[in-house]
Structures are given as C-alpha cells and as structure tokens.
Image (cartoon, rainbow, N blue to C red; front, side, top):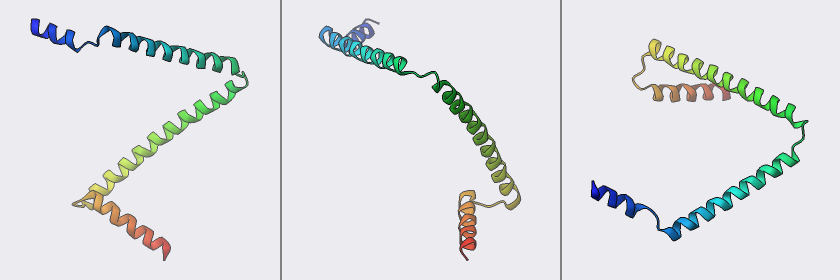
Length: 105
C-alpha cells in the first residue's frame, strides 16, 4: 500500500513541469476563447438556414446509409443461403469480376 502511494507520487510531474503544463493549457484556452469570439462576431443570421439545411441533409444521408447497409447485409445473407459458397469473399470478388467483364464486352 505504501509502495503504491510512493509510486503514484513519483509518477506525478514536478512542480516546474506542472507550471509549464498549466501555462500551456491557459494559452490554449485563450486561443479557443479568441476563436469563439471571432466566430460569434462574424456570425450572419442568414447562415442559420444554411446550417439547418446541411443538418437535415446529413440526417437524411445517415438514414439512407443505414437503409443501404441493411439491404447489403440482407443481400449477402440471401446469397450465402442460396449459393452456399465455401468462401464468401472469394465468391463476391469473382462475381464482381464477371459482372465487370460482361459490361465491357
């Protein structure tokens, strides 16, 4: 128990190093506050509508990605059940190669 306490104390940085860390963190905080004030000062209320549109489209895209992912998983499961390939990855690669070859002919 005493050894654990000693180990934890020796792992802590020295006071000079702590002061440097604190100074660095304070500088970073001032920089972030400056950026925030700049962003708030330059904000145009007309941008609210653009932000809302971007956020709604992002939500729509996420839903679409989720739907397509489910469709792909179901398709792979169906192929697996109906064809029963020994190696699914190899089967899909060969199928895609055949499809690509046919489209160029």
